[in-house]
Amino acid sequence: MRRLLAVLVVVGCLSQETPSQLSRPISSECPILKSSHGSAETRDQADIDEQLSQARQMLLKARALIHDIPESHQEVAAANMSGQLVRACDLTDALATARYLKKPEAEAFAMGSIAWQLVNYRDTTQALFLLQTTAESQSRDASYESIARKLIEKGDVDQGLEATHFIKDPSRVADILIRLASLRTHAGDQLGAGRVLAGALRVGRDSDKERSR
Image (tube, rainbow, N blue to C red):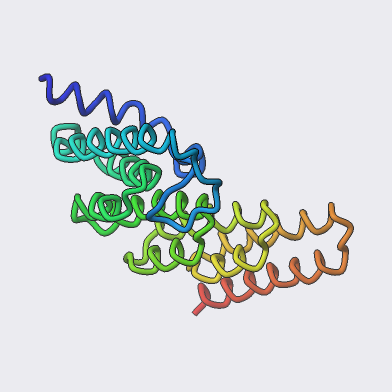
């Protein structure tokens, strides 16, 4: 019972966060990732390293007990643990946790959390690469969509559109393009907005043709 409560305490804290709501990294600098955050003061580095070590140990202990919680919660728990391990500068164990349940859909969902955190560290290239290694699924499409929206909202349109190209669901692609068109309209780029909307319409027509076959 104590083991189960320990898992529930950790997962309860994590499972309230979706990939789109995860906060900034624990540390101001993550040596594993290509972070652009400023370096910590030397005198504080030992404390930061200790905090990261404790966070990793707690998350790995929780992962070992993941099968003690209801199966319906295991996928979300693994995904949130994966994302938190990236925040704790442990990409290797984050990837191992993503594959821990040995289910393609669960792996894609967890990889989405990892990818989201990598984007926070401004390593979009690696984030998109890791998502490509997972099986095609609704979870993978959802992760690509959330990343594309995040990048476009931040003004990184080129990488946002790159993420959009990997999405298989035409309706998700159209939604992203419509949002981009809206942003360009507000920015006064009427011509650009029109071109993006034309692209969204083409996606819709192509989808209709595919369904009618």
